[in-house]
Length: 66
Image (cartoon, rainbow, N blue to C red; front, top):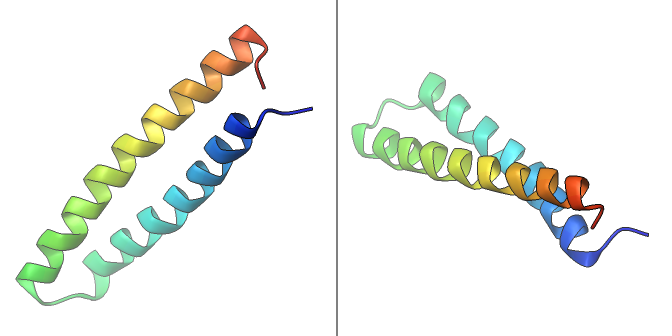
């Protein structure tokens, strides 16, 4: 059985994929500079969150805490 932490980390990865997609699409569609700054911040923050979450998932896998 997987831990609640593992489940929440998996949900975080899935949510981050959606937010990254939204931010990347904003670069294609948006013509407002302030909006582009916003989505640049979203993309940077979500990318960092995803990397950290994936590290934690890998740690849990190594320690067999999934």
